[in-house]
Image 1 (cartoon, rainbow, N blue to C red):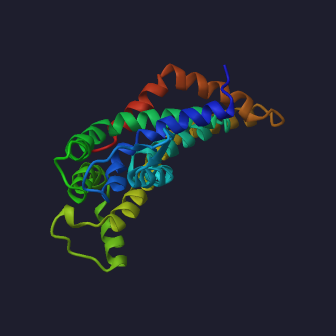
Image 2 (image 1 turned 45 degrees about the vertical axis):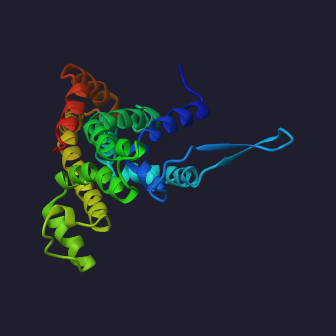
Length: 257
């Protein structure tokens, strides 16, 4: 069954909303006292009016940044690139569809990031909502697990390059690395890792293409497209070796915690 575009957008929006647990304190840090999201005021004539707190306004603004945060601070970038390279290696540019690949990448991202998100919620967001932490402290404790995850995936040479470009070198500890340096470093390292994994995924399928093309040339069947022969062979090979399980497991295991 094919989902309509509004339905797909609704599913993607609900998935993205899960990331708000990381950035919630950014919208709430402006107030030190917890306030209700919606305030109801009753006038003398019985008319009720509703008003939203400034926290909710900031939170709705942060929601617009979720796609950028998803790409720049989570495992999503590496996963979606590898899946896209696999689709090209199979010789099926549109199968699986973009919606299927995006959904798989999102759920796999949540699987990889689950412990990080749970720790961020437990250390920063929940104590702040319970009134046990101030806004600035809650932000630091919420971002600490995310920073740890990003630093674990970051290459040292990439970090040194961006630190040199920013004029900030010789950090005393990982906690001293600012997000303005860490985020581009993390994204660059993720791109490198994704292309390395994608290269290893592409090699077996390229060998099949070369073998099929050579056999057809030797048989004088130059008018027959090698894709017609190699495509079912590549699909059969991928199914026989349980390729999806192998690839998804390798991707999940490639993230260092």
